[in-house]
Every structure is written in structure tokens, then in C-alpha cells.
Image (cartoon, rainbow, N blue to C red; front, side, top):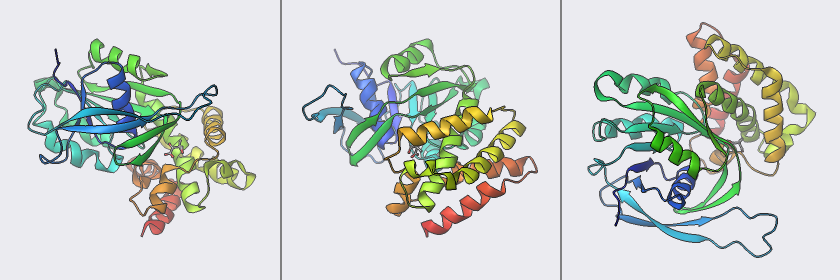
Amino acid sequence: MTHAVDIAILGAGAVGQLICRQLTVAGMNVGFIGRSALEASQQVLSFTPLASADDHQQIQAIPYSVPILTADALDNIRLVIVCVKAYQVLDALSPLLKQLPNQCHILLLHNGMGPHLALAPLIDTQTNGRGLSLGTTSQGVLRQAAWQIKQTGQGLTQLGHFTGEELTEHYRNALLAAIPNSEWVDAIVPCLWQKLAVNAAINPLTALYQCPNGILAEPDFSGMINSILDELIMVAAHDGVSLDKSFLHDRVYQVIRLTAGNFSSMHQDIAHQRRTEIDQINGYICDRAQAHGLSAPVNAELRVRVKQLAV
Ligand code: KPL
């Protein structure tokens, strides 16, 4: 017996495809929301798992197929996982809100912060029972071709409620069972700020200095990284989130060590002349500073410099 697809993924980038693979393997009925009615109704994807230390043979790519859903066929969807870039969230999701059933829950899973603030008022909790959860993942994954990804690292995934109706226990348990090293946290916003700190420190510096993450361990960068974190901690405190400097500092340097050979997503965006997420990373710190009548000059300068690179 085939079951109707009830989990939809919006955004078939590296993270979207990884989550899709993990939910498929766990037996969930998952599909991608297509960009046009002309797309195939099934898409063949390729997933290469992470090699373990005991794997002496070459790891084989695994082909599998997933339904592509059109925007007019979303009646059975109960959970949408949004994995597009942060700057695409509102444009991609807003037109779908009226097509999705009222009881459909939305989970945002992207780098950077910001879209949740604009989206929250659109999630009309009183009348339609919709809810919004947020998440962050540090799983390493590389997109090798349009529908081909390779897992490159393990990492923590944190999910939690933000506003409106809570995600039902059924879907919460399904997500936690499917995504390795994942947890449901009581307060997700501080977790997003912690991840933002990692991206705010690593991404613009690797993009500006055209280097892999590991180079940032050199002492030349420590003053800059400290200033980025100090401003972020000050702004987060005005947003009601208290962050510990030594914890954040350790976390940034741990990621620099663990991903030393990798090029950050912002470095890759610049290298491929794609739009970056600077507005949702260091830019978010500046925007929240401004909302509180403050300034974050170091993050503001990085925002300007990265934008200059992108033209
Ligand atoms: O998330 C990342 C990114 O590149 O966007 C880090 C953690 C910095 C790893 O490269």
C-alpha cells in the first residue's frame, strides 16, 4: 500500500537533499515542492554516504527516487521543511501559505537568521492552527550536481518550537529518529544565535581572505573574531538572549579546527559569483543592533566588504 506524501521539502540544495534522504531511509513519505508544474513527478537522486574509518573500499553512490509535488497538490502535507537560502524564504514560502492546509506546520532550516521574524505574523495561530518551528544543522554535505550530494561530515542538528501550534509528537519523533545526532530543544533562538556566531566569524573572513576555514586559527585573525563575537553578544543580549563569550569562542575555534580543510559556504558563493547570505549573517547582527538604537561597526564593515566582493 502506498501512503500519501505528508512531508514536503522546499529547497533541493545540499541540506534539503540530505534531510530528504534521511527521512526517506527512516520510512517517511517525503517529497520536494517543485518550482513549476512542468517538473518531473518523480526525481531520481544520488546520495553518497559518509565514509567511516573502517571503509577501505570506495563508497558507492546510492540512487533513489522522490516525488516532486506541484503547488496545487499540497492537501495532504502536514509538515513543510524549508531549506532554501535565508534570503529566498519569504518569496518561496509566502505564495504556498494559502495552498497548504491549515494544520500544516512549517520548519525553517537555513543558515543565518531573520526570516522567522517576518514570517511569524503570517502564521495566524488563532484562526488556522498553524505553527512555526526553527532549526539549525551542522551536518556537512556537498552538492556535486543538481540532484547529487555527498555527506562530508556529521554534526549536531537542533530543532525547536518558535510560534503558533507546536509540531505534533508524531512528526517531532519522526524527525529526531531520522536525523542522526538531532535534538529537540526548549529554547531554539539561543541555539540559532550560537550557530550565527560560528557563521559570522568564519564565513565573511574566509570569503574576504579567500582561504579555507583552518587559516582562521592563525593569530592574525583573533582580534577580528573577538570583535565579531563581542558585538554579537551585545546585540543578542538586547534581544533577550544571553550568550557566554568563552563558550562561543570555543565553539568557533572548534568548528575552525574540525572543518580546517573546507571552504565556507560564503567563500564558495563568492567563488561561483552567487549571492551570499551576508545580510542574514553579519547583516542580521547589524539590523538587530539598529532596531535597538545600537551599532555593530565591525560586522557592518564586513557586510559592506563582502557586498563589494560580490559585484
Ligand atoms: O556553516 C558553515 C558554512 O560554511 O556556512 C561553516 C560551519 C562555517 C562550515 O564551513
